[in-house]
Image (cartoon, rainbow, N blue to C red):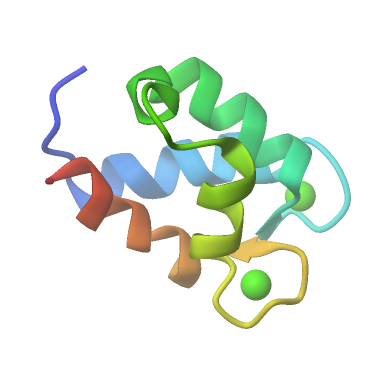
Length: 79
Ligand SMILES: [Ca+2]
Ligand SMILES: [Ca+2]
């Protein structure tokens, strides 16, 4: 997968995984794990753990990642 993603692509990926359990508009940690392992496995190479990534994305600290928070991933992908 290319490192550049359009907002629409990101949105459809988000929706696909966020709908798996609980709130369909929020990614739980388990949903984020599935999403990252399947779509962006390269993000977990090196020193980054899923725990780090989840904390970084969950800016309001409510234990779930909204689409707005999820867009922070774009910055990581373009690094
Ligand atoms: Ca969910
Ligand atoms: Ca959150």
